Image 1 (cartoon, each protein chain N blue to C red):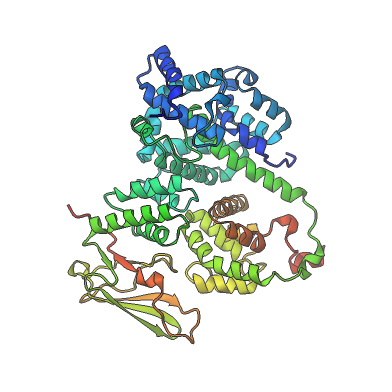
Image 2 (cartoon, rainbow over the protein chains, first blue to last red; image 1 turned 180 degrees about the horizontal axis):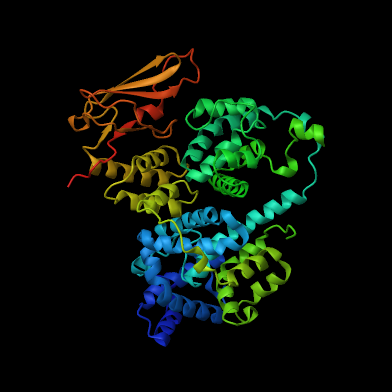
Length: 309
Length: 234
């Protein structure tokens, strides 16, 4: 019977365990090394000849070292330990603070969510050896002890903050909105129907958002700039979430912040995080939100701004 | 920071960034361990910015006050995981929820919605299995429309859709349960009054077409009712 593709990695795992007198069996290291190879190659059964032997040895040694340092913490998080999650959240807030300022807790909370989803659905060390039998598999972003856990976790939140900083910089530096946009051609019928069909699902997904993201997204979609028919439809679908459409509804992030007892920076952060989350769930929602909440560089001027410009 | 888009090259090396930060913080040379990453960093400001932030030591002393994460956070994240577009995440999430001793009505609603509407058949199956296990384990705190004598009658009153449930178990008497409409709006409903003589009246929202009569849609057919503190059978 043919050996599983990852069996040829076993000697290097054994060596790494023996070198450090690791408390973990080579099977555990083998699982994570196999997963690392899968993630690197983006294949379920990667061609191991494509990996330099030194790279595989280094990876195995790193996994053994990081298991020794981080396995206990990761196991507690994978079990849903609230105290361990609080400690992690504190680290994430501290990591986000330099660039995100007062919005740091919002980024940290979103990052915690992403990290926990990966850990709760991945394979903790206690199960790793068993999971070799059916063949190593797991979430695309699984933590496989290839880096110290703290660095891996912090990268999640830093990624979010830097992405937002780049987007905001793009908005500040973007060209002024072309006046012709207000007379832009109507959407074609098929697109309109697809958008109409996608709205109920979008509303349900908005309901599932964390509270601060949900509030920012709902307030943004209730702005007078959003097409009145769409706002009416949102209200019909979810009158408890979306208010009766009104031209007096808050429009700017400053006004929305006042309504939500927050700050403009937090409103922007939460809307951006919500938008990203929704876009990841359904491509139609991304298109819909791009149309309903265009980015500043392409947003049509409000009547007042148009007069003042 | 000038805008430079994230490129496929960023994706190629991103796995190495975390450990590269450790190496740099320990005074090592990234190029010795990750030559591809080192070359990429020369060209990519996005990845350089990430690395620079990662290398910094976070100031934990300044974050003495962090709100405690509530005990049900893990369950909420597992419910959220059901909607991530990746079966390798969704299926284990359903599996873990299936073995939970007790779950919130919102989690049952999430499983029901996934079971009915996910585009992947294996994910739908996993969610359905988890939901069935939970509904069985949580009985008698759960009542499903159309089962065990529970019936529902739709009506429309001034453009508002209502459902009247009858035949609810005795254990629901006097309680204000949560009504779950899998895949429908508003999803979860808390009725205005309590169950009385096995009967519960529920407002579901405005009829989208007031001229049409109330119709039993798939979402309504899958309706179930959960006592908020439903205890599992021992």
